[in-house]
Length: 399
Ligand SMILES: *[C@@H]1O[C@H](CO)[C@@H](O)[C@H](O)[C@H]1NC(C)=O
Ligand SMILES: *[C@@H]1O[C@H](CO)[C@@H](O)[C@H](O)[C@H]1NC(C)=O
Ligand SMILES: *[C@@H]1O[C@H](CO)[C@@H](O)[C@H](O)[C@H]1NC(C)=O
Ligand SMILES: *[C@@H]1O[C@H](CO)[C@@H](O)[C@H](O)[C@H]1NC(C)=O
Ligand SMILES: *[C@@H]1O[C@H](CO)[C@@H](O)[C@H](O)[C@H]1NC(C)=O
Ligand SMILES: *[C@@H]1O[C@H](CO)[C@@H](O)[C@H](O)[C@H]1NC(C)=O
Image 1: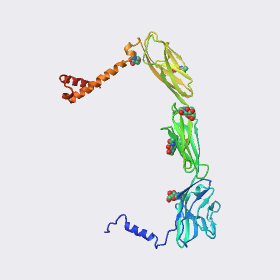
Image 2: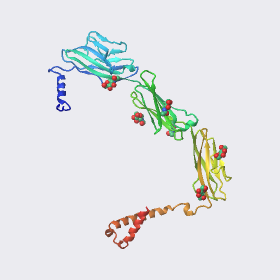
Image 3: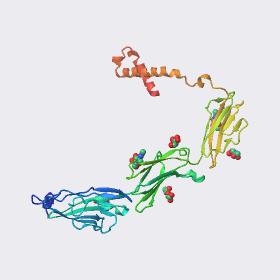
Image 4: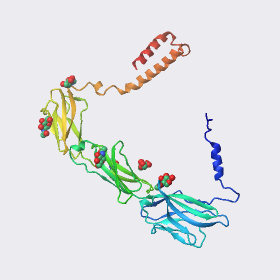
């Protein structure tokens, strides 16, 4: 049986590091500096910095090489500089060394790339080869961004039965972004969003289309919403505001009745309150029993009720119609024979509430203290303490 292996295997790792560490007192690594990431805009020029740190006396740069490394692929050269022979580019045209010149000390290996394409996005390694110290390198991730164009517009909702379900009410398009832009909607909580992506106008770019979905109603019509586009190439999110406009079925309610109608009162009026887009074209008043009785007179959105000599107990219906269709509301009406008595007319007298409350609270406090410390606080009540406790009990019981 093998002895259990220690984990982590510290010793072997340490000896590995030791064998790789520079040996000999004077030997230093060739140090190269480049930013880990450089971003450029599609079509623009980009500068890829790369600097060699000072070398020991007597060490010479023999060659500078820029390599492109693609995941899963072999590295390939994109630019080479030789101290005597100068620059060479396997695919000339868009590449240039920013500072390297022949017959001078080669320290600045920075590279310029013009007319940036999406396919230029990759990791590039800048490598200085020296003699006799060997080579040193640094890696930069070149990212190619494209600024999206943004627009937002309301979506016309056709008149018809589809206005009942969730429909697209606004559309926000962010086109030609790289990487894909992000769209969110503000002031539209819980509404649905249907988002899709299609290729943008330039290769490597993406167009994001976001449809804001809502069920047409008075809550949606006239509401301001904002499309919020975020993208790496934009310093701040772009916000595009819209005022929604949707057709919706009439939303009907009846006002005017206060449950305090009686015979002999002057004329009473019910109002049919309607919100709709487009505006209502007609109002139709009726009752649950059928058409209107003689004492009720429809005047468009209002119903005049002549309070005659008979009590009335009836439910009125208002039906409002617009270009989409109709909706109704009901209101039950009770016309009593006589005006209510004065006391009940003004309801329970408000002035009575304060003293009653004060009395109840003090009873509760006194009672509570007596119950807990009968001897200490309730000397004078002692004889009647049973009664007080009873009172408290019933007061608590009724609350
Ligand atoms: C470049 O390298 C980084 C770090 O290893 C990696 O996350 C990134 O995906 C690479 N980029 C490309 C385009 O290969
Ligand atoms: C989203 O929109 C696309 C295109 O307009 C449509 O085909 C799809 O059915 C929609 N999806 C939903 C869930 O509404
Ligand atoms: C919507 O925005 C417009 C213009 O910005 C403004 O005039 C209007 O009052 C706003 N409406 C609401 C409901 O906030
Ligand atoms: C806009 O969207 C971004 C990213 O999703 C978010 O961080 C930001 O808070 C949003 N803006 C507002 C005003 O909510
Ligand atoms: C009004 O409503 C009643 C009851 O629903 C109906 O019989 C009548 O035809 C309607 N009138 C109009 C003008 O629509
Ligand atoms: C009014 O009529 C309804 C149904 O016909 C009935 O249930 C209700 O008791 C009546 N109310 C009065 C106060 O007569």
